[in-house]
Picture 1 (spheres, helix red, strand yellow):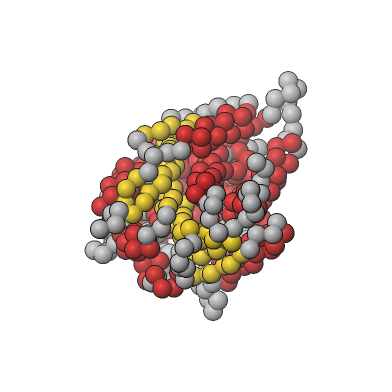
Picture 2 (cartoon, helix red, strand yellow):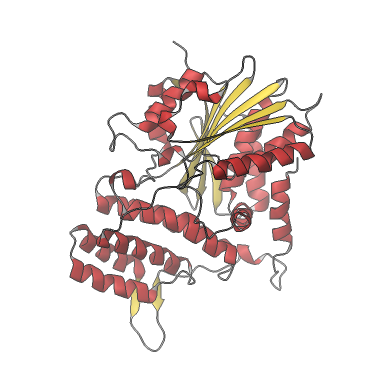
Length: 422
């Protein structure tokens, strides 16, 4: 079934320039090694080694050595270079912020105010066109919801971390074609408050866009915006109605809540308890399979380097260096996340991923049981991956988790859960 969001993806693919042999360029880019040979007879540099030396100096606040190494890294790195140089640019910026003790801005998943929503959408279309993680996550979530909603008269989706709501047009399109007519769709969009006098402005704008799309395809729609700290939300605020199909959806955003290392009563455990109390028909969870939440800075830096190297490598292997949407994606998503992980501590560090196995234990302890994967959804995801994406992406299964990876490294994990009622 087609989806309007991916029409932009298909149009982008169709306009890609072809090589002489007729194959798309993005599948044939050569990798650039980590060592750089500078022009004019300058020394060869290994940016990975320089970063390792620099992080050791920053860890003990050796200002002289760290400043000297940062100057060298900045000289050989660039946000406009190859993948390694771009990664080094943002990691150097992170280390510089940490060394200088600069305060972290209030966390928001929304890019800076100078970035237009249309630019964010274009960079998102680039992301789904060259990287399957977002597209397959949406496919996994939407198809599980649609299967459950085959006979429902009202579907209520509570979306923790809705941001721009890019996931939902595809579900709306699918519901609009349901045999017997579409159900009423209620979406409760939850996100962190924006700074300023209108903390829910971005979420409300997302709701207006989704409402217009529902009107275009004749899906009855209701939207509720909540912009506050997630652990302070009460069940009464979610306006759950009797006899509606209730689904809780959270794609990759529980990692932005403080964990047990920051607060004794962890907000992520409090949110899981809230979800259990709601007793949804389905809880769909996507997690970033990251191990860069160590309290020890050098270990965290090393794990973050492995993770973000993979993300920058994906774009280097699939997108031209001059693409403005790639630059925006690297600056406002990967670069911003890397800076938060490396530069800040305590409550200022808002990106705290756990591995999917850690989340499995956390969810089970909170009172959830994991559901089996739907084989037809898994098969469809693998078909999309094989037909539309680079051969180094893969999908694997571990227990009841669907894993998405790049060159053997697991990046994302998806699963479905149901509360166990006492």
